[in-house]
Length: 89
Image 1 (spheres, rainbow, N blue to C red):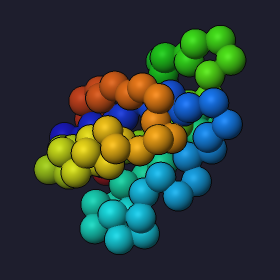
Image 2 (cartoon, helix red, strand yellow):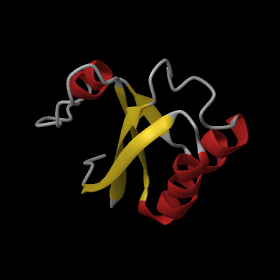
Image 3 (cartoon, rainbow, N blue to C red):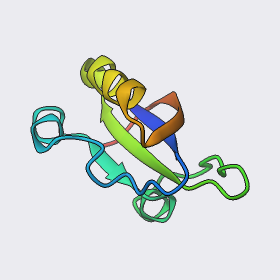
């Protein structure tokens, strides 16, 4: 089981540097633009509100809390939601 975070970015934010390299390495989190997420097979992704940029972050369920805490503290994340997803490997 995995969790996909739908992250709406604050105005002017790009998501660059939102996670430390240590967090990315430890959790194997994958951050993707909506276009990248669709390209790797995620269908039915929600569209962001008008004028809002978004990214998607996929992580194993066991690391959900760690990513949640980073997003909660990040000034780049204006709003986010978590969605459980199943990934066929």
